[in-house]
Image (cartoon, rainbow, N blue to C red; front, side, top):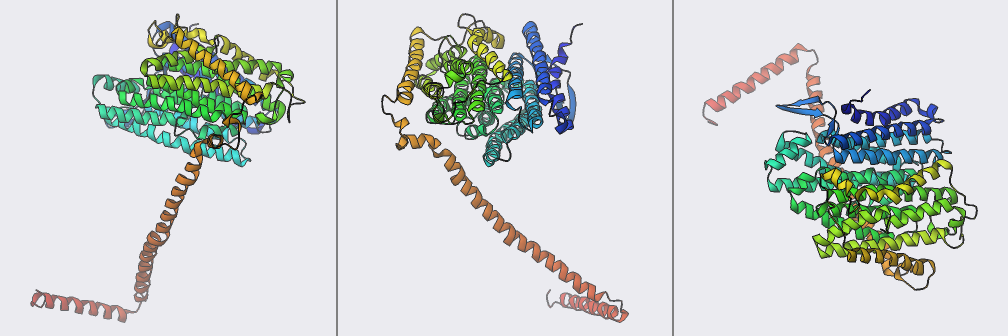
Length: 622
């Protein structure tokens, strides 16, 4: 029996939807089987995603569900439909695949948690929201799922809701991303005003036909990028992402690898015809991307929380992806998004193995874990080398392509991209050497390998990290051909570029070994009393500025608004109500049932009317 291709987008969404509904209804009664149940359904979604990917690859066309009309707006209306072209098919494969591995890992990681059924409920909602986002071809529906992703991430980050830090991190993520979400919503409103339609296809058709002015296109593109910057942690909306580490480690892997943070990159790639028609906006994307890449890398150099190091590396790598989009290549950005999903999920889950074994996130308290956890050590090393761009791992090929493109775009972009690659190797070398080499410092004497489900997920991701680069090799750019229909790679590095970048990355590891592990040379980054260290460890004081500067301004405005509400608006309301109440009491006194008083009042009123008539008609006031 042949499966109708138009049903595949529905089938991709159905398993996580069923999982969320069932786990929500059953509540605590699902605690015993929530993990395997949620994992099985997510794997089923991955199977349908694979079938959808194959169908798009085979047909070369968009696979779409039947559409249905939801709301009539004048001559137009809101029509909903799920569909996947090459970009969407790739994203559902990544999201459902990584989510399946995170679900599997979570069975072991959350085994002792009494609220694990709630955790898997939130995971199902998150997966559903992300899949719905990448399958939406209607701006309004896309925004609904965009907000659901934000809601689900808020619930997952704040899962340990009895911890003040977790609650604060969840609120920080939710509020910070709201600024970006407002930008996206404003862009959608402008699109509807210009096209009288929420359909993405109608938007792109209007762009190609020149029906939207250049200034309006630039405004729309910048507003879309504002939304993307919020979700993808681009400067200056990056501050929520490191604090999101307060959630369980599987959440960190899911949010930082292939889902929430990738949503912003996907949004820009999805909206790319708008950006191509607005070159100024595209240039802004490149500038913000390359700045974010090196900016976040500098802060990662001094972090002592293992998950925060990886968090800042995520911000940095997302900057690389935005740089690729800014210099004109969606395939390079999506290639790095794909490889990053492999090695970053691997690094976070391996970090989860470590935290699970030693009970702390502080890398200065660790050491000597290579002997205690050899499998975790090997997979973590593979992830670190891939992140640093060491061949022949997947991260090397995707990063090399972006750096080559940056060289053709401008020398300053190239220099910053190469400098970021060097810093990446330094902070990942520091992390690896402090955690795995030497002898245990304060913790780790009784460390042991993680349970089988946790190790299985990391091993699968390690294999993908090793072999994932083959999907877009310089001589065989399969991914670029699938996404763009072209048979050529968009950025091919010269031998000199490759030697320079790889050489600097290897030197970065050597530098980290000598400075941070052996202490052979002194370095400002290793001295807590130096100004540069304090600047970096305090994150350039941006968080302080937001919390005390902008926060103080907002509190001041709140106090002013409260004063106006209480003493201006409130007094006016009290005056009006007092006047009405007083008038009512006077009238009530008059209505006492005595006919004599009614007659007297009528005669008095008649007298006043006659007096006024006389004064005005006899010329006294006339």
